[in-house]
Structures are given as structure tokens and as C-alpha cells.
Image 1 (tube, rainbow, N blue to C red):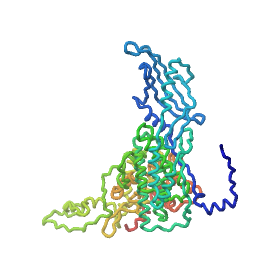
Image 2 (cartoon, one colour):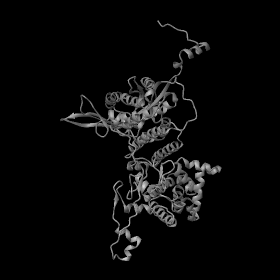
Image 3 (cartoon, rainbow, N blue to C red):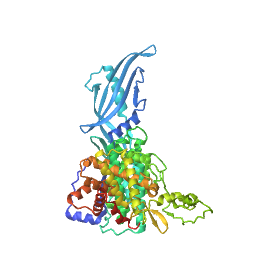
Length: 638
């Protein structure tokens, strides 16, 4: 007997009392986290599970008659009328045994279509209920089969395919472990409750994905942090901010380079390039501002970049049937869950920790030992993925030191009777000892090579001409392999010279208190002649060479400008754009990243150019007019 109960009416008084008596309950929110399986990945999972014979097939043989055999192959998935459409190719042989061999077999080739409704168990096992089916001929048209063939298909294929199950418990457990590691220690109890509450929800079929909804109870009872103006970070806080970012940047490089063997399209390479370079510029901007929370910043950047990169990773990871598929599912679901949880609000206290990043990196790479080292070496695989070509060779000076000691001038006593021509200054160095400084291991010849590129009173005209020749040589070498159209090449040469003028006043090195050092920006992130930002272009150029080899620095700066010209300016009207607008756009990207292309166009339309825009435009005009004497305004006396 069923007892009927009256529905409870929540009066205003009852609601008010419940707010005071049960505040935590009212602020406990059920969130939906997505576990998405794209059809290509579902196909790979089914092949790995059920098509394990040669050439990704499944051979089904009658247990009583060896002359009856079915080969199923090439499974595909799609959506049809809110159901999962599972199609597989069939090859059927039905014969009779004669003299120990199968004779005169009846054969049929065609397709089986199953229309299925996916189910997820409380134990995270994904299964498929067939609600309809259809047999098609090789032309995918309706077919009528002999009874003997139809009975054999019904007996063998339907049962075999109906038993396919995918255990999603391992990737869900891995995803939980990663998510827990993303929370700081003080938030772990609340995070564990959320993660422990994760349970299967509905299954949603879309045009390209089967999505298993993961339900979780999020405790949002804590008050969100007040929006007070951010105070300047202390040196210790800045260091923590940098460390958090460096771990994330190393993680980003690590997962991007896992795509090195994948057949990426030009558009996909562009997406990756844009995401990496722009997020690095955002970090440099935040570091310069000194008023940001490292934890929040890294989390926001993680989510922003993942939203850009997720389609690329999903398009390539998961097409190869292997055990790694479940790890990829865990990687995707943990990353997607982070984005979904972030929308709940700051009360959850999510933090992108180094430990969490390492766990994520292991899932996508399959490596157990990952340290996420933030190093300055060039990463050839990363350049390949981004479509930047081979690295620039390092053939010049590339030292570990931040400064070099100038040797004291020595007076060399020449033997009596030494010929007068040997006393000439430009020949006397032949008699000087080839000494090196033990603490630096750098020869006097190397120091002389560097010193010739230092602007000093009395050599400014020669210095400017020398840098002009270097820039022209480097630019011509770049244009030999560039796709910049001929009609824009002279303009590109002018842009390179104007950028070097604006960035460094043609300087790579300085002398300060008897020491030679490389030129650094005010915030210590950019170096040398072209002021190449070490944070932004890490792993894409050699950092030591950027600091100490003026030619390498010029090559890198020219390469970056070429990337922006061909990747952004040309596709967006660069062939017909006004020269001044094109030059300003390239320098805006060079200074602030790909995202500044549109921002500069907007500033140009409204006439609200920034000071950096105006200063570059000034240098660009001087280069066009060959007013090289104006460079003395910034060189001064050296």
C-alpha cells in the first residue's frame, strides 16, 4: 500500500527560518562537469576494446561450423534522431565443409547500422542499448539477405556488439586526483567533499560528442573575497607569482610539444602560436604592473588558453586505439572540469598548483618523471609545432655571465730594433698575449669582438653605419626564406630598422663601471638590440645568445617581425594596407603580442594612439627619410 503525502508549502516564514538554521545547505550548489568523448575517440575506444584482430577487425566464427565466419571492421559513430548511430562494415562467409576444407561459400559484404542509447552505470561503466538496426548493401542501400546469412549475423554480430562496454572509472579517478591537487592545502577538506560527491548524471548526444555529465556538490557557503583595490605585491609575493607562472608555462610547453608528430593544419598551428605568445605577453604585463594575484592570474590564463587549445588536442589525441586513450580522457575531463568549476565562483579556492600541473602533464605525455623545468634552451619540437621552422644556429658568443670584466690596458715592451710598422696600434694586438680571464673563460679576442659594437663618444657615426649594415644583412637573409611579397620587402627592411631604433637605439651592449653588460629593459625581461622578450620567446630562441650575440639577437627580432607580418598582417589586409598603418601594426604586435593587432587598428581609427605607437611612428618616419643623425638623440655620449 502506498501512502500519499501532501506537498510541503514553503511559506516566507519557513524560508526565512531555513536561511538562518541551514545556511550552508542553501549555499551548496550542484554543478555539472563534462566528460566528453568525441566520436573519433569513441571509435578508437571501441576498436581497442572489440576490434583486436588483424587490421583493426573482429573475426566472429561459429562455434559449431568452421565454415561460417563474419569479419566486422571500420566502426564509425554519428548522431541520428538523438540516438547514437553505430555503423560497421560486415563481410560474411557461409559455406560447407568438404574434405577438410570450406567449399563454395556464400559471401556477402555490406554494413550494419545500430541505433543505440548510451547508459552510464553508478560504477562509471559506459554501455550501449540497441533500439533499432538496419542492414545495408555495399552501396548503403536496403538489402534482402538469404535466411541462412541473416540468421548467422543475428546470432553472432548483435550479441558481440551488444556486449561492448567502456570502463570510465580509471579516467574519472585520475581526473579526481588531478582536481584535488589543484586546490591549496587550506581548501582541501572542502575540495575533497566536492570530489567525493562526483557521480554520473545524464548522457547527452550531440553532433560530434557523447557527453557524460558528472554531477558534484560544491560548497559555496564561504563569502567570496571582497573586491578591494589590489596593493602592490611584495618582493616575496612577486617571486611566488613568477614561480607559479613558470610552472604553468613549462607545463604549456610540455603538452604543446606532444603534438609534434601530429599532422597539424596551418590554422591549428596558428591557434597554438597565438595562445602561447599572447598568454606570455599577458604575464609580462602583469609582472610589470606588480599588482596581481599569481594564483588567480594563472588560473584565469589556464582556462583561457585551454578553451583555445582544447579543439586542437581533441582533434589529434585519441585517434590511435591504445591504452593511452583513457589517460587522454582524464586529461580532457580534468581540464574541462577546472573551467566549469571556475564559473561557480572564487569561494571554491581553486589554485593551479605545480603538483596538479605535473599530474596533468603525465596524463597527456605518458611520462612518469616530469619536473616542468623552466629553462632557456631552444626547444626544436616547440618551434616545429608552432610552424616556426628550424632554430637559428648559435655560432657567436653565448655566455652564462651577466657582465664581463674589461681588461686593464697593458704596456707591451717591444724588443730593441723592432720595426716601426709593428708599433702601429692596429698591429700591436698581434704581439699581445692571448690571455683569458679564469673567472669568465672568455678570451681577449672575444671581448674585442663585442666591444666594437659599443657606442662610445667619437665612434657614433661608425657605430650607426655598422649596425645598419648588420640589420640589412640579417633582413636580406630572412627575406630569402620568407613569404613576404616583393612589393612589401623594402617596407619590411624599414620596419626592422625602425624597430631596432625604437627598442634599443641600436645598442646591444653597455659599459658600466669597467664592466661590459648586455642591454636590458626597465623590467629586466627584454634584451639586446631588438629587445627580444626572454619570457615571451623562451624555448623558441637561445637566451644566452640573445644576450651576448648581436647578430643572433637581430636575427631573432627579424624572425619575430616576419612571423607577425606573414601570420597576421598579410591575412588581414597587409598587402593593401597603408605603409604607416602596416608598420605600426607590426610594431604593436612586436611590443604587446598578437592580440594587439586589432587593438592598434582601433587606436588608429579613433586617433587615440599610445605613446609607444607615436614614438615608433617617429622612428619609422626618420628611417624612411634616412635621418640617421637623429639617432644621436638617444645615443648621446654612449
